[in-house]
Image 1 (cartoon, helix red, strand yellow):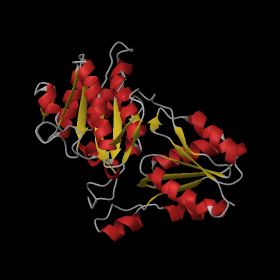
Image 2 (cartoon, helix red, strand yellow):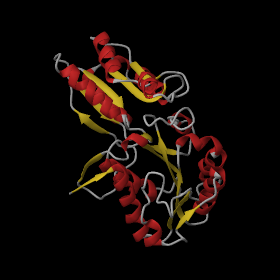
Image 3 (cartoon, rainbow, N blue to C red):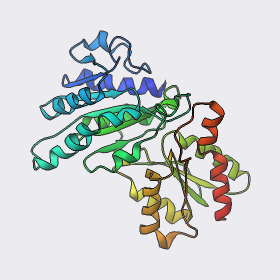
Length: 322
């Protein structure tokens, strides 16, 4: 057992695979000398050398494209974007190349690339450095999408992402890098398997990443009112653990979906539609969908908090159901 932060857990996962497999390499802006914007790759250059830990020019489209090409020709690269906002400038190599190659070559080629990126709001990053863009990539067939909430899952899911022969988009919430927790296993966690964060009987709160902690806060408030909320941490957005979602909704007969992304067009809408379409007969109330306001992310701390969904939103939604 070891207590570590999410940042340390992510670094440990990459070290494990880089020590085992010389094909695993990492490159991106400031990942070598600086050790990454959030310190995840600190010490990597000294241990693995400049051939496998490479600083790149400020060209996300260029180095993500290079990672896709490297993966297609036999390496297992990890590309780090400083912010998920910069998906905007590298969608072509991800969406039109990485996601399509295996299909277009009839399965005769693999693209084992992991693209890691910091995401989310809460650090005063303002409109261009605070977004949650997971809905963009979950929309694309051929990409797998992961978004952990704690150190144990960060380590285990990143091991699985590196092992996967398909391109994996790996989101890391900026506010969770320093989050500490017990790591009891150094084994991979299968992609597509969520977990029950808290058992309950009255309502299911379905979420992932930082909003797991918002759900926990809401569950504590509801418990004082005699309402027991079950919290589901999806961990992996695609593949999605639909069996776990079906199990929890069939148990509680009520569902709240909360995500940090802008509510309009978000992945929360996909989850809500799936529950409404496939589990309609299990529901005793309409699915409640909670997300951030449909505006650019603000800079000022008070405005950030106003913009974000919160525990009170969940509590009010549950009260309305009951």
